[in-house]
Length: 69
Image (cartoon, rainbow, N blue to C red; front, top):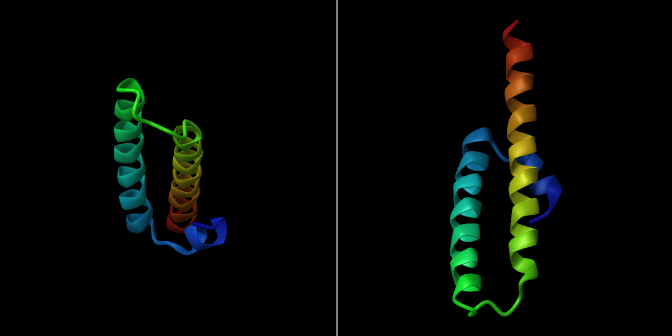
């Protein structure tokens, strides 16, 4: 998914994406522990995606706070 698409998502959609990514990272770690994970870079890429989503959520919440004041 492209960064531009994530910026256009609503806060609730981003929270859902965050939950999905956390779940996927957990499953990938379990696969890695069982030596069934072929591409170990998937975990790194998903963690980076998660960090991007969290950053966007933080920015949206700060923008909402700024509008409220």
